[in-house]
Image 1 (cartoon, rainbow, N blue to C red):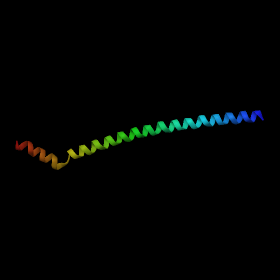
Image 2: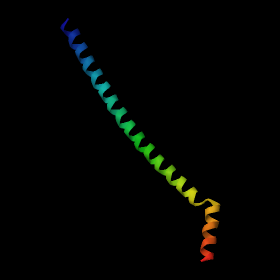
Image 3: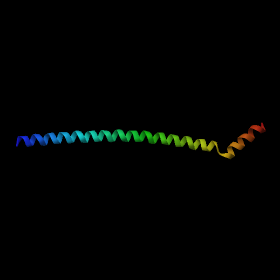
Length: 69
């Protein structure tokens, strides 16, 4: 009976360690995904700003404004 209790205790401890390791891995993975999402957001904002400046109407009006001066 003592060996059964010992084996069950070891199994519970091992499962607890595995669960804690999985939770830590999930937190690390979620933080990395969050960092990647922030980078993607910054890149998309930069592309939106660049496409706004490369609007043909703005480019031609800017060039025309330079020649008018």
